[in-house]
Image (cartoon, rainbow, N blue to C red; front, side, top):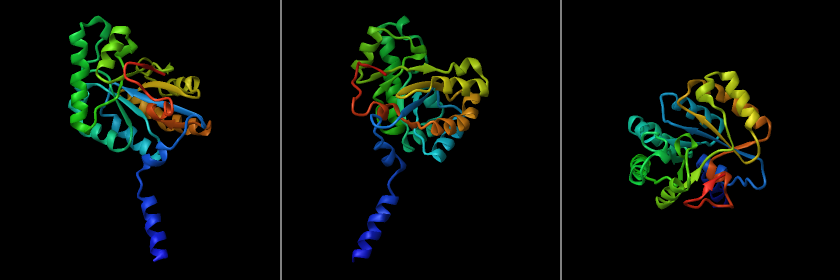
Amino acid sequence: MVIHGILAASLALTSLPATSAHAEIDCSRVKCLALTFDDGPSVHTPKLLDLLKKERVKATFFLVGAQVEKYPSIVRREAAEGHAIGNHTYSHPSLPTLLDNEILAEIQNTQELIKEKTGTLPKMFRPPYGATDDRVLGLAGSQNLSQVLWTGTTLDWKLRNVAKIKAAVFRLAKRDGVILMHDVVPQTVQAMPAIIKELKKRGYHLVTVPTLERGKGMEAGVSYP
């Protein structure tokens, strides 16, 4: 009976999802960094997800509603594999230029789409281009969303060069950093194996934004980091 009990306990531990160990990372005690990807999903995202799974790394994806409609299975996979998912509006407009009802429509439509595909409403929102103000932040807060910006952007959409994207990430990497990239940029996905290898070598734990903020919490209507 004792042997069976030990065996059962062992099997239970080995059957835990990969996210369980990841969720226990305490970023107040270890060096953490959040890799975030905007504008997807795209045809390049599955290759990125394959890599993240292989390396046991979690990332944060800010999804555009129109892309969610186009690639629903990828969205489901992102959620199933333990990555954090945020709202990046439906059509990627500059929100401060819109009326209140237009901003809400951009946010609400994407919330509904992501919930439909994953079963969960996002708690995070990232304004396209980082264009925001108190009005946009307040409207996002009314939808129970916290705003997530970044500590550094690679400008990968502009660079379109693997070596330059890698160099940008290494230059921007710092403890508790939030790095902005795009999984719609093929060169970014191509650069990721070397990026992850080097960041791990530097001692970083690559985590989601919610894990990065663990202990501090993330409140609706508040901007992070």
